[in-house]
Image 1: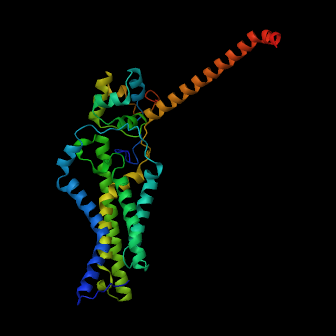
Image 2: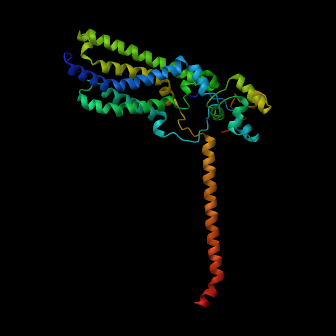
Length: 82
Length: 259
């Protein structure tokens, strides 16, 4: 039960954990800044939940990057954090 | 199945009937009260109650750890075990002595009440939370819990209906409702209502891949603290050993001479 994740939907690798640690933020701080639950940040970082477009943009605005700078749809390794 | 009969023609008979009713009716009144209170709190005045209780943000990084038995699939198994125990103590269900059933009904009601509270409060009662208290992921989780629950309830109802109809058609018998103790019917109905109420939380517990309430950050903090403690203990013991050997070195010849 992780929310938006149909069986045929592959997880989208992202750099949220890396960017958060670079920014010196805890999950709780990041969650407060983007208006979600801290547990949801954990799900995002582990790639167990693909966010809505609105949340993706909020994260992008916060880190000062374009959305594709955080999420790597191709899974080429650019966005791999694990 | 058995039918309890009382003598109504004498004042003593009424007394027997009244005490019997209180004895057997109390457990159901307690469970019915819990269900009614939950209905009032969650459905009738749900938004007001949730506004009052959930005024603050939901605390996620709870420092306490829920026992593993009361999380995930073990919780679901325990809830059903408690429900079966409750059913077994209903009058006439398994044919045990009425007095023994009455004695056993107390613990059985306590067990089902405890398991129901444990299930409903699972992961901060996510299944019972209003939309405003949840973020986008949690809303989707909660909505999917209800969807799955509706499917389960619908399947059970259809299954029971078909099985009952088939049994009646094949055996050509009618259900003798009079032969079933009223308390058993009420108890079964109360349990069914409780089941429907708690089902989304049970579905959540069953499907939850991370039933452990302690999140990664907390776990990492504990690991770091343990590493730090171990390092401190090691350096302390090394220092003591060093002090001991240096004392022995410094005191060695002298002590020998003194000896």
